[in-house]
Length: 237
Image (cartoon, rainbow, N blue to C red):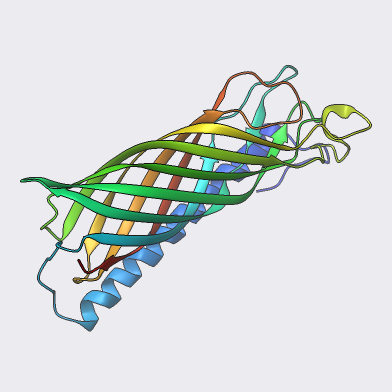
């Protein structure tokens, strides 16, 4: 998708960012489906065993966010590629679920902005580290849904270059820069057991934070959504 004129229409750019995010999600889902088919055809189904105490997960996906509204017009925050790592340990076996503690880390190296005011930052980098709890339902089944919640630390780094190409804020010196914030995190997903050690995971999470430094005064908060897919390694007791 491209804009029809040199002065890019914010709505056009926003649609382009959303289109890129949809393509990223579809590509991730297709890759996971292919991996599942290959794994199932390469070996007979293993007995479901969820007695391992710890696990490490690595996934890739896309992060998108709500559009902030500074004075002068709305901004559109584009979606961006993300890498997520998750380390978890089992706390307790319940009759219908397993309870885990987890530490979730996410990095979105760059997300571009469009819209007005054009003195706002042109890009932000997002990082979250959120300890929390995860409740894994029907852990003995091959498909196992789960929910998670937690809270922790968020870090944003904003470009000093504005959307128009000058300094952010319209001044002679940049008003972009880094900012730290608390994070409230919630999520849900589903695991598909390949064998005793390896699990495929689909993951959706939300991160509620204060606004990044957009280079212009911007009241309110930011809600970011992540969709990803990856693989989990389970460790022995």
